[in-house]
Length: 222
Image (cartoon, rainbow, N blue to C red; front, side, top):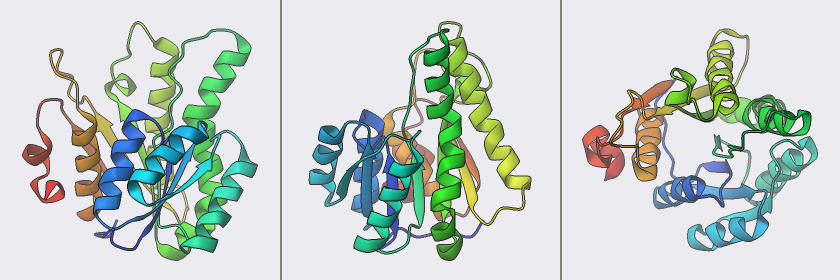
């Protein structure tokens, strides 16, 4: 992976109306990124977009048509996509068929949809598909075993993408790794680690809680 910059790049952030997605959008906007803020909750997406000079779009990450709309909207307004930041999450534990299907579609199937629909743009721009996983991908959360399984699957999807004949690179940002029982990784730590990782051309980063933004990646915090 080559070293990367963010100024004037086009980034699509899924789950951009959520707590972490908003922090990620703000970090990107501070570095000059042009943002498409996608979220299932359009009101939340609009709130983030208003803070980051981005374009808000309703985006259900399990719906290919909505991905296609987001990609074409980004291209029409800003140009082809350079980055997809996959911040959307489905954390509900449900063993019934519908709940399990929704969990799997949000956490994993959406990665393939994004790769397929945004892939031509990112292949042209030599872009990156950025994934976020928790320590549960290695050490399952006993209170959320199904979500933990999906996190592990996401981690292994990244591994498979690295060895596949694909033109779109992926980067994996793992947080709370190694686990620290008394300290969870803060959202701004994850965002800063992500930008530091991409700027250095790395394919993955492991972010322990309590390290601090400047402690882990001083350059990204500046």
